[in-house]
Image (cartoon, rainbow, N blue to C red):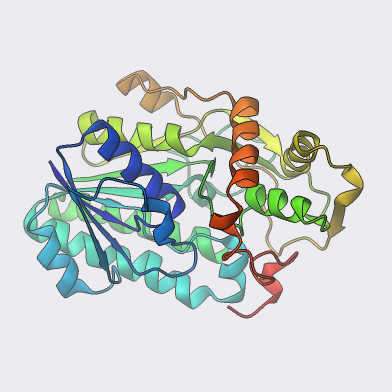
Length: 331
């Protein structure tokens, strides 16, 4: 099998590539990534390059995508601008990559009749405060520019499946964590700032709830969908670990032996949802997938990885990336 993986130098995309090639060494992967914020070639330094090719380009470049799509079996799209804070400061960048880029991939998948796996997010459902967990049939109510662009892309994928019969599968996953996550995200940012004895920013009261999943559990779910997923369907993916941001930070500080006085409450992010929560019964019941990582144990291992791999994150962890309120900056 030959796969075109878009956004494969990012956190989840590189996790997918490492995992897939380790379990399917005879498969071939073409990794297309434009190496913008969040992408890092060091994420894949140690993989066997025998059946791997990297191409630096943008998913909006239709000519490149069309040429590559004709020579693969599956297109897996991880490519996206993903940080909510940056989307508030610069929505245009998110519109271009997340919507126009997805359209470019869909046109190629349609023309060459390839399976298109579109990796989306639980954030498109909006705030689940005082509500039951969202299912795949729940109405989409995105609250910020990032989630709005992802919701638009999901609708576009669904439209291509229904109108043209394009073979598409959409995944909507909760917050990921694990090694190689870009330092702008909550868990690595907390670890790095704590190691430097810098204040740990919590937005608002810090009681926003997110559901967490280890990246390897996420990519295992995607693998199960490549094998047995139904075309035209959407699948929620979660490990059912709903934890407040404040609790996450306190857990990390406890693991590192740091005091909670490092926590600093800062002004809340505009449009900040209180809770994300989805129901993954569909993929569990239909495909038999289930998460394997224990959250607390995996969090400890993640903290250890960052503490042992300063050479990976130090070039990335500049003042802007670690800023307490990134939405106030120009990106």
